Length: 216
Image: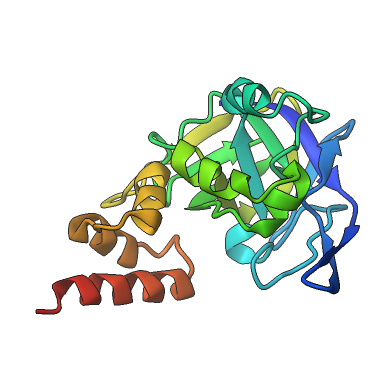
């Protein structure tokens, strides 16, 4: 898993339901390394910190492997790395191998896998259609957010090097599938609820789903 592009965004303003809003999803490749800070990436735009940025969503990684798939679906878009709002475009990123809680060395930073990206209407704004949301969910490759355990710089060519394998965990892909599955897997939900690499609010939400499934 190697970084092939470092991306930052400036605020872009748009109207949604009659209100003027801002987004930082319009990210583009930049020269030089990124500084991964505890709650965000230096120089990046985080327009709504209720759902982006913060300790558990400090930086977003997306795989370059699936760009050809999306380019074929949206050939008229002006394509570049950063199209999905990712700070780091990573070759070989495989959500089925990324366990929630895994710790990696990434450049001079130490990072931890936290949770998959759940698409919102702002992805639809960038792609010009809200149809992308269901397509993104169905495709099953959401990328991942990371927690910054040690701040540091990341540049093109840096690789995710496993430092510590999470115990009693589930993969990013498994969690993503459970978030949208009609029929939940209680064993996987239990693993997520017990996983401290996930934010407490997410775990509480998953716990309610688990308890609802156990109700007679």
